[in-house]
Image (cartoon, rainbow, N blue to C red; front, side, top):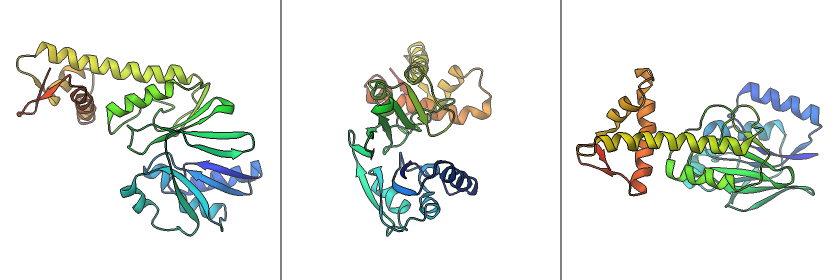
Length: 248
């Protein structure tokens, strides 16, 4: 009874205790592989702990989308206990005779992010692309929105996120994410239309749009606005002027 583990946590003691409890409850004898959804440390840096917990003595595959700069630092040790195997969009990982996981390349949260689709259970393991609560953060909104559209194409009835509770209406949740981002983008465009002669800085946009947000959250809000502006620039809808202003 050997299993495949999706993400490793970050090596915390409480996580180790949880894994030990699960091993006993399910009668798990060992690991046959590990899948890393993305490089963030809370999903990947607990690999050594996991290998210890499962007393892994033979090399097992660790599946991940390639990110060479990050991977060199992440997987510098324990290389005798695992083999790093890079996956691409559409690759199939065989779990057992009845179960497979399809790799879905979903960049945006990070450039190396993947989700996993279990066709047999109509389930998606979403990593940090979709969360069980709130909304996700992202490095690149343009690619993130494309990833959300990709996830909508799958026949999915349940979703297991990297954070938060199980999502029982995943397609509704994905649409909710898309609508939320589109609403924020429309607010930005509306303000840029109002000030089309002069343009606006990202800080000015924050003050106009986040009127009910406490000022100590403005830094995070501005980062969000800048992500939206970057997407709009990529789509040739907005231009950045030399004085840090943005204009339609």
